[in-house]
Image 1: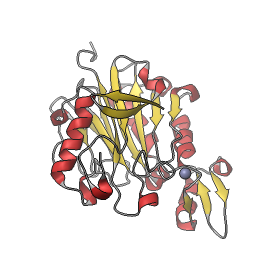
Image 2: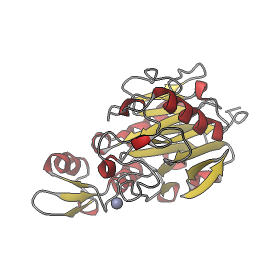
Image 3: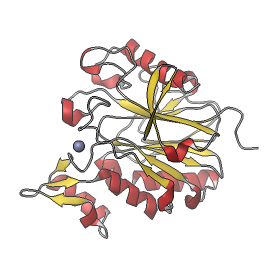
Image 4: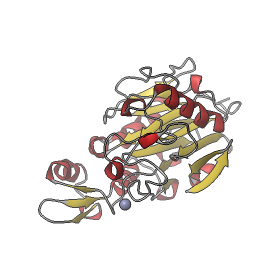
Length: 275
Ligand SMILES: [Zn+2]
């Protein structure tokens, strides 16, 4: 990823998505916000104990840095599921105030210019989607449960069903998340993942002591996107481990619970909607 400074806020961007002038996107770091203490400073999560007015200001700054109105943005109440919400021209909102996010929603899609979709994470995998043919953007939140359940595949299928997207056109950015260097898990996590990825299991794990292994959630999601029909050259993997880079982003594994949340936002620019 590359780092840019927008309206004084450092943002990470995917080179793969940056070449498209029709969209704006950014992955936030932990810097540039007003939160203090363990949430310092750009925490975007309402439910981790931080002051709501600080989170609201942080979200406002993120949206402003991308030229977006948070009042028109959309966010899901992420539950490690696979429900996909299609956001229309009338919202709903869900970004500016606590308790307003779409219930039980881990993936968002929209074709409405100016509607910024937000996914937040603190070790789980945030994924951004973009179909330049049908002009649709999307976000997905995929921790290990969402990865087992096929969250990214469900989102791509919903792009096809609702907007006529062809998976071969879709671009994806796999954001910062806990990496294969640090994500040690045990049998109860590994067994369902093995069932979900029977053909390429060996490429996703490095066995450790006992029933433990290091798991590569980036690669699991990349393979899930390939299985959904994306081209390899249309997938950009940030490769940034949250636990190794707690100076840059938030990580529950590194900091303990509750840690702050960073986020990823994507939107169609105003004036670039479907004709
Ligand atoms: Zn790491």
